[in-house]
Image (cartoon, rainbow, N blue to C red):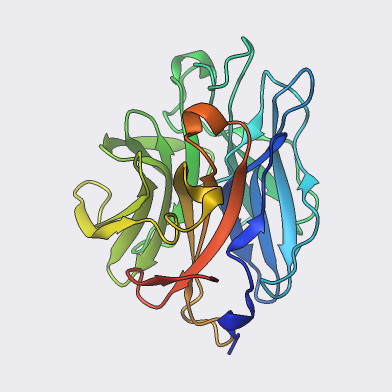
Length: 294
């Protein structure tokens, strides 16, 4: 079994006054971890947002992030939700965080997308996720933070969870044609895993991380309390700890844990939204008690 005490720092990638790492999502292919996240580059004419990818064979050493998306403020592809294995290869879901006016927040033109790959290395151009059905893109409304999940009862059915007036949910049988299900009050950066007959949903309210449980994405119950990890002791996380992503490796013979990837900011996000954001890692046996490097 992997020795978690060999992880010397809770930080995977550390942001600074010119950079930010946000919104982690991780795919494990059985031997290698593929980490995707938002990278913000505060250049003289910036900021610019990118989706980047890094890999690791052991959770200890991570490759330098590689940009997967173009340098374009009108798009700002970012906030990768997750990667799923589908009938036609791998699908990575992500958002555009359109910044045409120069404001730091994404405009009403922000939408959600997927990118396809055969090998987790080379990715095709993004395609719009039409989660509201066959309506014009301009009528879909602002939506960000997508997450794809296979239905627990019907393996041919997919869910897409995304931020629009809380957490909205749509379903599809081909990842192309979607039916809108509904929405619930919820934080942002939703991530879900399946355990038995239920889905466990992590989301990000204003402070820390919280979890819900549901068996139908229509009725929800709270699960556990607020998760803040070592935020009080971590200067790099004092502002906000958010955007949790759970990777369920409890059945993997080497890792045998739930892994939690997240990002945190050194100061209030009203000040450091575009910089000083870092990616971190924690782990748990039960989704309730989380441990991390000291």
